[in-house]
Amino acid sequence: MKITFLGTADVRPRIDAYVSATMIEVGDAVYLLDAGAPVSDLMLRYGRRPDELRAVFTTHAHNDHVDGLLQLFSHCIHIYPKASYEVFMTEEPIARAFCDCIGTLYHMDFPKERLHVHIAAEGVVYDDGVLRATYIPVAYNEGPPHFAILIEAEGRRVLFTGDMSQDLKDDDFPRVAYECETDLIVCEYAHTLIDRLDPCLKQCRTRMLAFNHYAGYRHEELAAIVNSGKYAFPIRALRDGDVIELNGTEER
Ligand SMILES: [Zn+2]
Image (cartoon, rainbow, N blue to C red; front, side, top):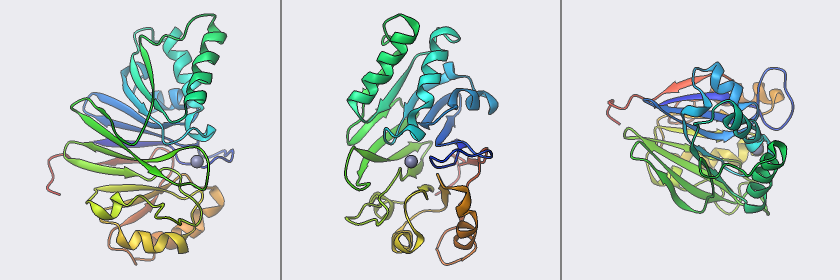
């Protein structure tokens, strides 16, 4: 499994980083986890075409995680007419608005026979025999649904925390991180603070943890955590274009 971090920034505009989008490759199969803009261009930059996609999983419907879907859908109408993939969104009105927007822009019905938009619910939402995606609800204050997503492929397990609440009350950090062994946890750092995260990280059973989705001004704060050496696993702060490869044949 090869994971390319296309965008690692939070919602603020940046000159050196894009918002949340991650590409996952398992052999020839390509998937996205979150689809912040300009995800279509970024896929090409890192060697894959949008019509190679099998599925797109979004953690929640905030703009910095989904607005690249409009570009992706547009390209798949005119540039890649054979593209066909599954898209998992989390809120029905927003999914409908995106499909309606494409239909209005191009004076056509949304091509739902090729681009299959689903509303994700808790549990396994996708399994094509190559990759399995499990949605796990997290709290993120009040309001619309937010999910962590567990990705399993080639005997490897990667947990994306999705966006969590600032104070991490009510066990907001996904408990699966404590309950099962993961090869990698990709942890957001847009909302949480390290003193809240610290007791959660201490319970994680993972081989590696990587922070993404953080503001540029938090680089130094993250460097201190990365270099602290206080956790049982290595930690890194991700930058756009970083790649993590998990070898499927290695023993866990
Ligand atoms: Zn976010």
